[in-house]
Each structure stands twice: as C-alpha cells, then as structure tokens.
Length: 106
Image (cartoon, rainbow, N blue to C red; front, side, top):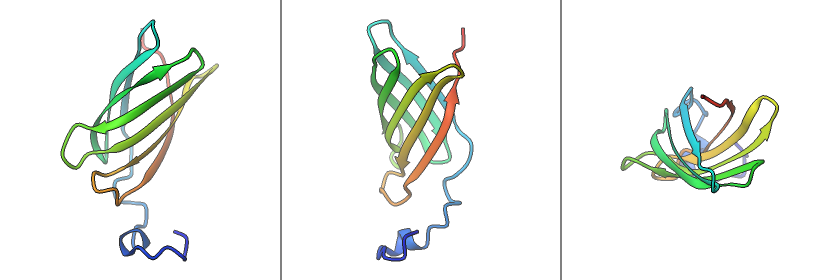
C-alpha cells in the first residue's frame, strides 16, 4: 500500500482477505450483449455488458448485500478471453484486481 494513503482500513489491508480462486461464467450473445456470474472470495456477482468481437466489457453487480461490485474487461487471443476484473466488497473497502483466461465451453 502506498505509504501516503491515510485510510486506516486500506493501510491495514495486507491483500490476503477476500483473495483466492473464483469462478467466472460468461455468455456472449450473437448481437454482442454479455451476461453471466462471478463467484469467489468476495461473494457472488452478476455480469452485464457488451462485446465487439475482440473485447468484452462488463459491469459486476453484487448478488448479495455485501458482495462484489466492479468491472471486467477481456480481450480475445489465441488462448481464450484474457480478463482483468477490478472489484471491491459492498462497502468499497477491499479493492482487488484479478486476472485470468476464460476458455470456451461447447
């Protein structure tokens, strides 16, 4: 954490709380709309957004009172959809960044 940060909650955050593996399920419709879910250490969230053929952009909205909120951005490459999610808990006190690759399931 940047030493100039004055927020006590963020200063004490060692990055271990609400960190770990999760599951992302994403559906891209033919017209380019996206929907899906995420589930992980921050809780469960819903995905809604759009795709343009090479890039997916989606908002993450909490499915529970204290679940995650944030964004998902993905770019298609030869391995699948390479994503980066920027999320936080419902109170906005636990910001996290997660990266991964989604593969197509027939």
